[in-house]
Amino acid sequence: MQVLHRPYYDFATFLAQYFECKVQKISVHAGFTCPNRDGSKGVGGCTYCNNQTFNPDYCKPELSVTRQLEDGMQFFSHKYPSMRYLAYFQAYTNTYGELERLKAMYEEALAVDGVVGLVIGTRPDCMPDALLDYLEELSHRTFLMVEYGIESANDDTLRRINRGHDFATAVDAIRRTHERGILVGGHVILGLPGEDREELLRQATELASLPLDMLKLHQLQLIRGTRMAREYDEQPEEFHLYDVDEYIELAIDYIERIPQTVVIERFISQSPRSLLIAPDWGMKNYQFVDRLRRRMAERDTWQGRLYSV
Image (cartoon, rainbow, N blue to C red; front, side, top):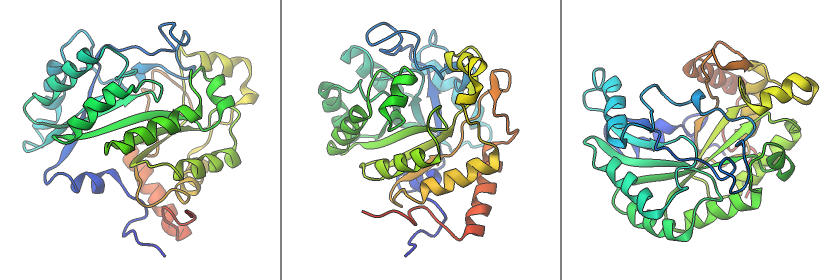
């Protein structure tokens, strides 16, 4: 039986359980790298990745954490004077560093007036127990979510995109973080080469068994300057780029298998058109969400409809 009073558990509803005011994420670029970039596990990074696609103009690693947050706040404060903010450590791997440096950056962000919590984006192979000890303590005094880049549940795919870890590593990190009482998010990309609809729905069932609090779905986008863009030029038959209606059907099929306790924060990513090769849907996030909600109503379905323990 459907227990949601909405077709899916959205991020705004989730945040309202923690904050009485409007809350906005502010991205921070803290100057980190990744182990599959610096030679620790590989070079070149993930084949699809170009961090310029999601870093706002104010996110410049040469600026302090405080300055980036204050610059980001200026954009929203004129329209929403009572807005509060979550510092979102987003670019690259934000737990990949010396412990004291990490702690100093997180604490600096929390000291900025108006910041009421942290969201830390990272890789599942970059979460040592010593850092989890600190994050567990931190979660008792502020809002905290750790967001892991899962990307795929298929080890062949993870090798193909030069991820540098397997799916078991993601499962372990998610479980260890959850056991500390820390909110856990996950990020997956739908449409990576070699993954068809059947494989992606198997992935949804795999993720449904994990103690995730939040999930982001993103469609595969081909970005200029990436290794994957070169692969597409050489072997376009290896890729299936979804049109918007086909992707909406896939996203609905996917979240039908995800339990209603998991927040669905996003369905799509939006890269700058100057960097985007394909697919170019010409659609804002809110337009996509409106269209998806209408289609869910037409299908008389909801998140978790096909989920079973």
